[in-house]
Amino acid sequence: MNSIWNKNISLFKTRFPALAGMLEGKIEAFEKGPEGTAPLPLCVEQAKNGSPTASEGGSMLHSKYNPGREAEQAVSAFKTDEEEAAVFFSCGLGYAPIAFCQKHPSVPVVIIEEKAEYIFQALSVLDWTPVLSHPALSLLIGAGTDNVAAILRQYDLKKTHIFSVPAQEAHSADYFKAVRQLIQQEKSKDDTNTATLEKFARLWLSNTCRNIRQLDTLDGIRKYAGLGSGLPFIVLAAGPSLGRILPQLSRLKDRAVIVCVDTALHSCLDTGVEPDFIVLADPQYACAMHLEFLSAPSSVLITEVAAWPSVFRFECKEKVLFSSMYPPGQYFEKKLGWKGLLGAGGSVATTAWDFARFCGAKEIFMAGMDLGFPGRQTHIRGSQFEEREHRISSRLNTSESQSTAALLSANPVMLKDYRGEDILSDKKMSLFSWWFEKNCALAGEQGIRTYSLTDESLAIKGIERFSLDGFLERQEAKAEKEAFFASADKAGSEDRAERDPARFDQVLAAFADDMERMKAMAAKGISLCEKAIANRLKAPEVFAELSRIDNEILRSESKEAAALVFPTERKLKELTKNLPEDKTLSSLYYSRIIYRELKKACSDYIEFFSSFSTLPR
Image (cartoon, rainbow, N blue to C red):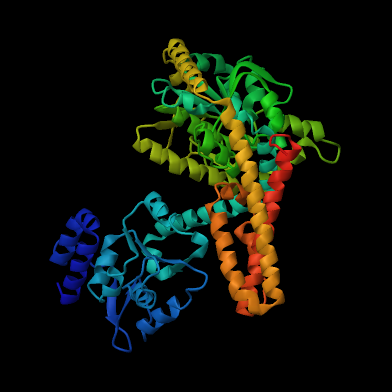
């Protein structure tokens, strides 16, 4: 091989020894040359300026005239003031990543290539020293899309520039299409989370303030941790296919722990069978309505402290909490002890699945988790969703028209179910599917298998098909279930014995004092900013004082709680988009906006807690 290859491959092996070890056979085959190996993928020729250029299948991967200058122009699209990382989907001979690494020696760079021979040929043509010596380089060769997603998740993908040339990635078009879809899903998830926070932050705050003492009185799911390793768990979701499972529910309950999502409870109880657990994770009033006029005296309700207050009046065997997903509850749990953390994938079914995993289940069976609309139905017959459609239907807004709107309102797409037949799904469902695909893969590495008992459901990678009849042939597990609940009851009793009732009131009072202090500091910051805006000569001393205030605020233990009702980054950009051009004035105006919003956030907490008489006035 030539000297460029020898230099590059030496750098490659030094920088990525584990990757080089995995590719050792392919490296040796490439070094032996064309004898007994496949021909090189790229046709390398000379550009007009004398530099190497390349084509594949008749398509040029670089300029025929000056590929180096072309690459420099391409990487100039990177916005240094807005973007924080760069990702290259393949790269031909490597002109673009070389130019980028020379121009941005400290910006994280990710190069993705499915087929190693393309990277090897590039290493034999151009000097890759600027790339292979780049301190923040990730080189993904032949990595599965899950591994690619794990690496990319380290970066803010909204601030990541994707360099993509269709001709350069054509050899693995499906692979890069899948990677691009993963990136879009991550961005969609972030957009959804931001929009949800902006819409529901005050609701989460209000509910948490109303329910805060439940953290002192109710057990956490941690008492179930790891106790169900010898039991199968069945998660009942509210998809239309659940109707095929319900007639066998009593027999299933004899053989497994039944975990029912709130939306499926009505249909479940209609069969005369109470599930072992009911999961309600969403704080909205509409979700509390799923429990309206129902009772399940032998079931355990799993929820969180931010749930709608009426949820805690539901008649059941016991209510237990999982760790709050929101900052106010997290503050108190940090002081008083965690209830037990469950994953949040945007759907109550994700939380129910994660509870089964939390209990130590090695087998988790999903039923009715369709993530689509089999038979053009939206939910199981008799669910609260369907009942609501009937309750609010009218001559001009029938239940059928409401169902049709649900089917068509979220970018519908045709996918495949476990039978290989078409199932109508949508963009929102694809996010849930992606969550399960990702987490079931991680669980699989720990020996946890996930199955679907309903063939009509959307086929998800990592969730295998399982016959309902086959499951019903299993032996009953009544004794094992009794032992599971007995062990949990014992753990709960031991936990309650260690609680100090006075401790909760102390934490409440300390939180109130902290909020008052932060509010006062924010008010002082506002006053100082206005003082310097009125008299620019006072700016130096004001900035020094503001720095001391900021340090005090950053030391506050309740600052994360206040962040719940603090503007999102998107909202903050809107609030600060018309700042003065003068640098000093701009900084002062910006600081005043921050302090005003912080003061408002603290005031919201004080108002809510005082209104619900949970804190001393």
